[in-house]
Length: 224
Image (tube, rainbow, N blue to C red; front, side, top):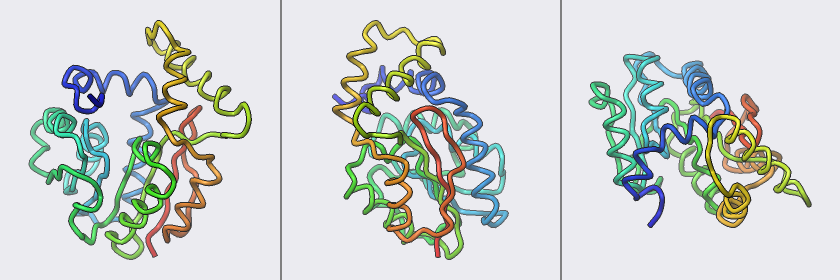
């Protein structure tokens, strides 16, 4: 069973993610600000990987006139998002599935946070192209995920730092080494340089790095 379909794991998603991602709340606020630079006051925003609802809740609180399309393949994670949003959930249309099943838009902005690191390079590029195809010209796209040097020794060094941050933030993993080994096996992490290239290959322009927190990087780009 995937951790994203395990009700017990999903119920603890928010607490774990706050502990693992440096400045998670600030990341959400920065993403909202970057979207708002190019969005209308009553923007309709695509949120890919919306399960859990953390970024949706942050955006909804910042911009009370925005509406959202939240896409995620996990029923349990979408249910968690609905619960997290409370009275704001009426501003979100949820779609269970992947980017292919998302509405055509066009949307005034889009985000994909803590999601793309699960996709191999070819699928990552295809997903980015599908997001860009659904955006209004000039709309902002914000992405953030694991992205760090992957040359010889780089993965071990950076994942060691990731584990140390988790521990310093109150994590209690009794076997951090096993956790790092699992991440190395499961996550097709790319270097920051290659991640930026993929955004450009997908058709985004003005791609800029705006966030870096140990193993995580975040970029903002513009649909042409």
